[in-house]
Every structure is written in structure tokens, then in C-alpha cells.
Amino acid sequence: MNLSEFSQKAQLVPLQTLDFPVFQKAGVEVIVRRDDLFDSELSGNKFYKLWFNLEAARCKGFRRILTFGGAYSNHIHASAAAGKRFEFETIGLIRGEESLPLNPCLTDAVAWGMQLQYLSREDYGQRNNPEFQAWLANEFDAFVIPEGGANIEGAKGMQIAGEVLSKQLNDDFTSVCVACGTGTSLAGVAVGVKENQSVYGFSALKGEGDLAQNVRRLCQALKAESHSLSQQVLPENWRLITGFHAGGYAKRLPDFVERFWQEFEWKTGILLDPVYTLKMFWGVFYLVQQGFWKRGSRIVVIHSGGLQGRRGFK
Ligand SMILES: *Cc1c(COP(=O)(O)O)cnc(C)c1O
Image 1 (cartoon, rainbow, N blue to C red):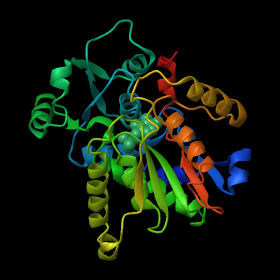
Image 2: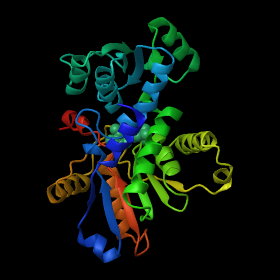
Image 3: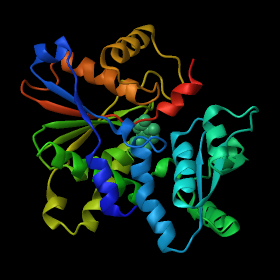
Image 4: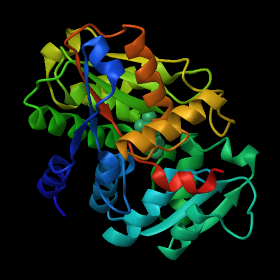
């Protein structure tokens, strides 16, 4: 698959308008971009974030990739699937101790040929340390992809999702909503759409830390690559939305969020994952009810996939 085939595949991702009385009442239209249907194994934003990373690995002559994640990580799952499909050996460095039998996520990863190694939480804390990464690259003769595909290559992949969305809707939308972990997807989409369209990142984490700084840095790097001087002086078209994290990763959800989850899936037929997309949709419904978006707004919500992660959730 080359880049143009990849973009074409992204153009085929369906858009689904949601029909709920709250949206009518607020006078807004809400459209879901179903990136959960992008690919059967490499669903959601992770395939986009891997795309240019794999290309970089290939250009540099690597046949093996190495990356990091927790035991339920969508990124580990997608990296293993991508390795199998695009003929890379894969090594996954997993946070914490091995727990047997393997959960469904790691079972898939191993079935796709990923070699797993476990890192103590302390060692795992070094995952973003450039010296540690350089040592790993040398030790395993592998191209190192950061946790979550969170680098400029990752953001560049999601820029494609934004550009494709613009084409699909002929730029006829006002806002885009994206679920955020590292903010890489948010940055890519923000640069991919037009400057007058606002992109809202719903943080799944409690305490955003340096999330905003990461997004800013990636946006600047992407714009610098496109050599667009005019873009660099324009104000930012993205914003972080916090307060819908429900305590952070892997925390028990409040009952009313659970009820919202069931009702949403029942009425739309769209499945959500509890870590990212559920929280974003909860936030979108809440904000629409609060009149956050003015009447006439056309809001696209990117369904970033992650449904494999539902299997680990009771
Ligand atoms: C990984 C993931 C995200 C977070 O993406 P970032 O680019 O790290 O912000 C959002 N949604 C889903 C379903 C994911 O798996």
C-alpha cells in the first residue's frame, strides 16, 4: 500500500449523522467519522499514527520495530497487526509484570508475531528518554516508535485524516472533536483541517500535564514541514477540553456515564471504548446541552476506534 492508496482508504471511512433530540434542540449537527471502521485489525487513529513511522523505518533500512505500551494498549495491538501486514518484526515492551494467561490484546499481539518483553514500572518510566531509546535501537537492531505513536510521524498520519475529512465534507463543518491521550492525533487533525475550523481535544487523562505543550510542539513541527510561513503566525485552532476524564485511565466510571454508554450504543449502533471515545461523546453531549456550540454549528466527532480494549472491561 502506498500513500495515495492509504489516503484513498481513509476517504472511504463512513460519516454518520447522529439523530438525537438534544442536538435538534441546540440547533447543531453532529456527524461521526467512523474511523473505528477504517480497517478490521488496524482500527482507529493508531494505523494513521503508525503509517509514517513504518515508512521511516523502511527508509532507514530497519526490518524490526520496537515500541512500548500497557497490557491493554491499542497501540501495541495495532503495532503488532501492522508488523504482520507490512512485514516487520515487532517487539513490544510492556509495562509491568507478565500476567498469564495473556489478555485478549496481548494474545492477538503474540499471534501476529510480536515478541513481548516486560519492563518494571521503574524501567518503563525511561521509555521517552532518548538515551534509553538509542540503547534499545542498538541492542535490538530496531526502529523505535514511541508509546502511542506519539511523534511527528504519528501526527503527520493524523494530518491525513484531517485533510481527508475536509475533502469528504467540502470543508462544510465548523468544529471537530478528537479524543486525546498524548495529543498527537489532535495536533495532526488541527493542522489537517482549515485554520477557521476549531478542533477540540477531549483529554482522557486526569491532570493534563504537558499535553498542551506537546500538541503545540507537534503543530509547529508539522507546519514547519509544510513550509507554510503564513500558517505559523495564525492563532491556534485547537483547544483542550478537560473535565470528562472520569478519574483517568482504568478508573471505574460513574453510573450515569455507564447509562449514557449503553443508551448511546443502543440508539446509534456505534460501539465505544471506555477509555477514550466514551468520555469524548459524553463530553460532546454535555457541552451541546450547555449551549457550548452556537446554533448552526456542524460538529464532526472522530471515532478513533480502540474497540479491542473493550474486551478487558467488565
Ligand atoms: C490512542 C487512542 C487515543 C489517543 O490518541 P493520541 O493521539 O495519543 O491523543 C484516542 N482514542 C483511542 C480510541 C485511542 O486508542
